[in-house]
Image (cartoon, rainbow, N blue to C red; front, side, top):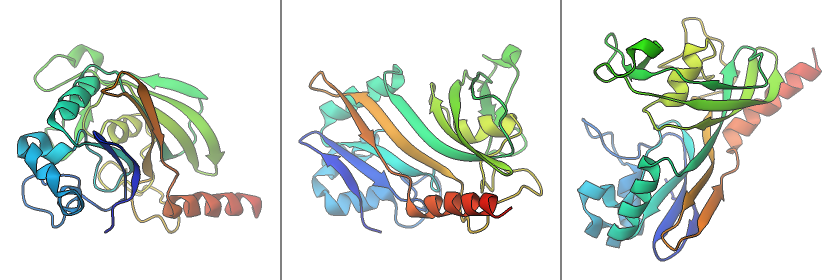
Length: 238
């Protein structure tokens, strides 16, 4: 699976990650990862070591596509990680969720923690439970881009960086992300032809080591564009 590089300079790589590729191995090795591909294309990244994930600053889920930052130097890695930890990074995702989201925009402030019933998942907890073991603040803002029959296309901006945050948050509202097999409900509707969760990291803006702020954009990939085209054409014929 070839790497798609959106931007590159002496300290930074911006990768447009394809869906279906694991970023970094966790537990049982999942086959070839994005880290493996990076080391083939940029062997000097090996000098950053596993403790710096060979320069991979953050992660995307296997079936999520879009923008991923990779640093080329230890100094850049440490700087960029600090920006994520201090919430100086602006991230936006495009996601199609099941059902009609009635508000034009909103904020989800539901704390998240690992589910006791399924260790793969995050669970939404009450505000009063925030601060209990493993239950952490999680904030997502969103706005409606377009409504279709049975689905809503959203732009979502996570203000915190919790595992599976968008997937868990929208499921907690009763609007799971279309095609999400882990967080989807029993008998959840899935648009015809959708083979993965409809979640794409479309925009990222981050302070750069040179003191500037840099923004990067990734177009919605063809497989997800095709789903929207199909939903649009279905609406026009009914």
